[in-house]
Length: 217
Image 1 (cartoon, rainbow, N blue to C red):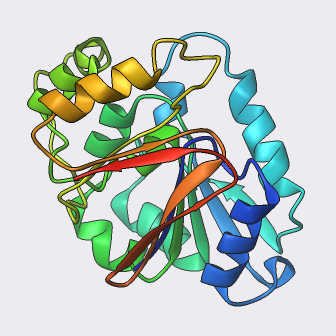
Image 2 (spheres, one colour):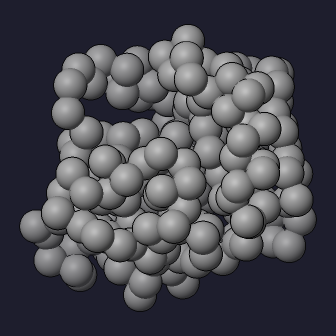
């Protein structure tokens, strides 16, 4: 499995180079499929997603396509994912993304490079459930679409990733917020600012960053 779990997409050159290394071939020879599922479940202005996709497109892919997980036949979704070298999951409501992905897709996704942007980075934790939603202050996002609980479709890690540490768009996510999470979570945490990502290569997990991040065990 190769994952680049970012807070805010490919926001700096260090993250771009980390993706290039995980991919192992030039972007111009690779196909990327974008999953906008989490974004369409989030209300308000979506200009930030277009900015994220503009940075992604500027890397010069052989093909960049959009894939709607909901409404298409399973075989079509699987075929579109199979064609891709990189799967890019956008930000938004991670609970909607989690419930829109079938666990049966894991073996296929595991052959690709997965790049998450915010919500797209949060769906791999075994701690993705109503308890963590309450701890993180995310119950409103969970309940917004009529859900009371959620499970990860790709539950692979004991740790939970929370993005946007020190972000001006999330002014409550300061050091006091981080300290409170460390004390109350009950599970390991990665807290990332918008210039950081957790990188996974098989069993190896590390952080690539031009900013600040915290790992609470």
